[in-house]
Image 1 (cartoon, rainbow, N blue to C red):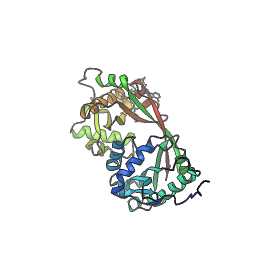
Image 2: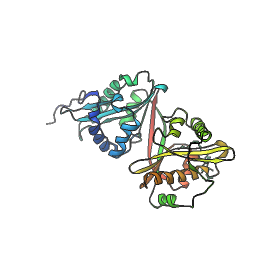
Image 3: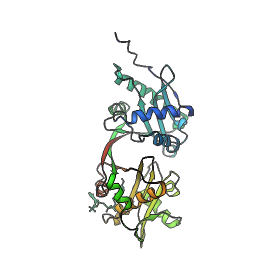
Image 4: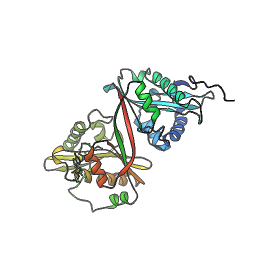
Length: 314
Ligand SMILES: CC(C)(COP(=O)(O)OP(=O)(O)OC[C@H]1O[C@@H](n2cnc3c(N)ncnc32)[C@H](O)[C@@H]1OP(=O)(O)O)[C@@H](O)C(=O)NCCC(=O)NCCS
């Protein structure tokens, strides 16, 4: 005979503390590998997830809640990356680990996720936040249902493109360096100001501001292409344990469709590999419908890896 099903209060929910980090990372590594649980803000390895929680999400425990089973083991988590000056937060989760074969798995997932959301939004760290975002794999159906129930509107999908194997090697070891091609961003204040301006114009209100980008405050390496009239474009990214990640690329609207974007991405990947060592994969996230960007990346050999959906409630 089956044990009685307890749907609510399966896990007790509480604010996270620093000591939870190791257990949270272990849980997330397991759940991130499954598209049904995958959240777009996180990588898949322990190193990537640790870095995201300790460096991208600043002061992680202040914006995180966990759900624990009767033995005190962490089985659920929801973390928030907060930008108080924008009144915005990006919710990393909810992650809920329901025992395999549980007869009410869907309800347990949803009820626990609701409790995580209720508590996280009351944390002092989220005071004044009115704009929330979720981001998950298209096959994370629990997240889609959760978003709809809580009044989050589904945004457009974005697609993760990756470059591996010989295509990556040929980008990294390709042509002789071009003296008038892209170069690492230096300390020239005028060039830096123009990169900041182009970033704010192309990516307004993103998690990383133009100033943070050029200062390297969020760990980015930046390459820039300049011409007679100043900055033509820039590309910025960082290195993760297994991946060279292209985070931002922008070209002045008057200078597009002439190969500048492509040469910036190539130069960025080389700069990242030179600084931190070659990785087996390069990746970029492209909004569905950004055809110019998709064309630029596919011309370099990138291919579609997975599709993610963002949900937003304002
Ligand atoms: C994406 C971006 C960086 C590309 O820069 P770029 O210098 O034009 O890049 P490239 O010239 O190397 O490649 C762009 C390709 O897209 C094509 N293209 C341009 N507009 C297009 C459109 N609306 N639909 C389809 N293809 C388009 C170009 O013709 C070119 O392809 P081709 O060389 O085969 O003809 C630039 O459009 C941009 O700054 N966009 C705004 C910011 C942004 O979206 N960044 C990407 C975030 S992932």
